[in-house]
Image (cartoon, rainbow, N blue to C red; front, side):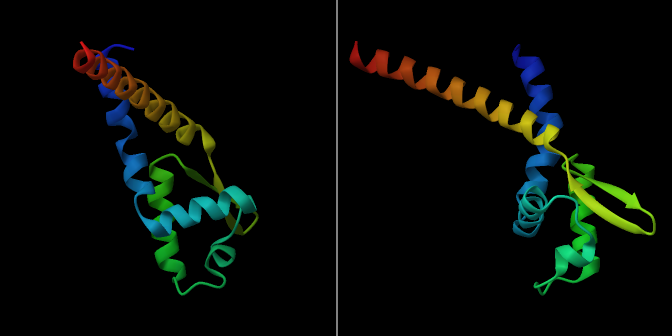
Length: 112
């Protein structure tokens, strides 16, 4: 991947990383990963977070491509969308590989 393509990819994924940077949103993603599609009532059960706050957090996650809203009759359920997270993982793997190469170059230079 060229540096320009890589930079564009990381720029495109920035909202995803920002969305996951909030503890409440991260908890919501984890709940949806384990529980499947869930309603706002299910996502707020047993928490002190209001339905309005969870709704706002879910919209941020939806804008980042991490969740989607499913309308089932009169009820709305939210579902995890793994594709964006997989792209983020691939980008982090690429960064890790670049870091490993840089460390190997530094090691070779120090040892020579």
